[in-house]
Image 1 (spheres, rainbow, N blue to C red):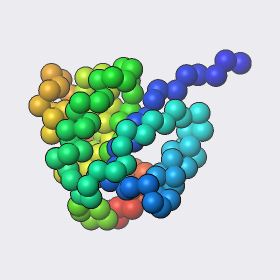
Image 2: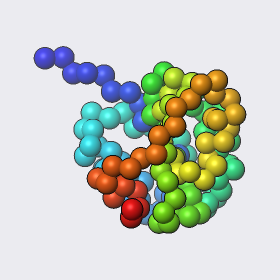
Image 3: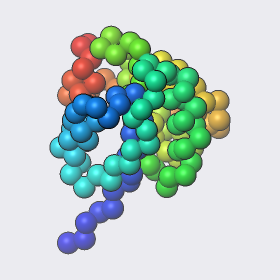
Amino acid sequence: MATRACRPITLLTDFGQDDTFVGIMKGVILGILPQASIVDLCHNLPSYDVAEAAFLLYITYSYFPAQSIHLVVVDPGVGSPRRPLLVAAENHFFIAPDNGVLSYIFDKADASRVYEITAKHYLSLFNIKH
């Protein structure tokens, strides 16, 4: 039986490289989707710099194949009840907190769909209590 190709998942965080947070995030992704192809965009952003993350996402996502998934975890309100979003735009998917990190994507996208992630088993991955 042929293995289905998996769309790339990019990671953009302010976690740094000095601890296990990036590795844990990759472990969670691989636990959900073992055949995932994970690409590290950057993990050394200045802490909580939403504007820099928004810019880096904007200038990098189009280099990836259509249907790629771009996961951004840069949020000064981490652990707060901020909504996690899934945005479909420009033939890509973006998962990020509702904090402005997708502002350039919204400005550029002709047509986009925005969904709030509300499934409890996914909210626990974001450490959000609803």
